Length: 196
Image (tube, rainbow, N blue to C red; front, side, top):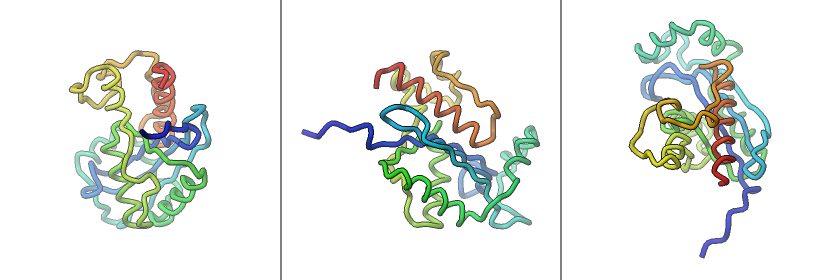
């Protein structure tokens, strides 16, 4: 028989990334935004964000479809290019921040398959250790399970027919830190509503 989980031992990390491609094989990370959320109280424990330099600034690897999509959001794109740091430095700083809480780190994203792939790639390349381990939480799949709609595998919150009071829209869509904050609020609403 396993011992009960002590929520105070855990920290949720609502993470969002912005990129130039659909996966690390055809693009580069533009930015990372994250909010640390205490699992026991669901209170925010802090925010973290970074813009990353491209590994090849003159000819950075990118997916043409993704870059065409970014043309709709020139202000947001420009935001991601302000004060960028080397990926190596970003990985070390992110890892240090996550580890500073001394909690079991739970990576949360919607959908996790996209964001976690980029973060895993970053850590594997530059620090060799992913502080989130390899068991991230997919907020989309968690929600679809709660709603009894496991096959409603659509990307957007409204398409999953989520209760309106669970949905929190980003105040600045497509900017990683604001998307991470909104996603964190959605996580809080879902967990609070379901008495997890």
